[in-house]
Length: 185
Image (cartoon, rainbow, N blue to C red):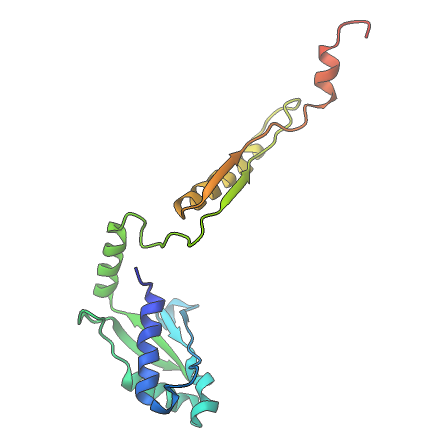
């Protein structure tokens, strides 16, 4: 399943080519990223500043032309982008339509792997769990690495990798060797 960033990247690429047809044969510097602050929307397009040298216009003018040429509907005709706003020198803040977002998330939840593609090459990953010293008393600190190891194992298995979980007992220590020796040794 396509990610929202890939969908928006495709839309902005088409908007750049529509606004500036002379760039079709060139490598277009395109950057659509998740917004760093919720008040600026869900995503932002930072390409206007990068296009200034290629186009010869101010970033804000480029951003205005991109917005004018952006198709705000998805491939099925549903509204994809609810709001576009230019901030600063030419950042385009993008707010996704709540109804589109709801349908998109509903589709992801119905997929068996939540829309995450299987890795191209599955790897064998070894996760080493805690190694408490059996000669000493265990405490809650030993659980931390075990829980982290289990979480990582589950995550890598979900992503499609072959996980080998190793949990070894740590140093048996001198205490065991001394306790088991008969008197006189």
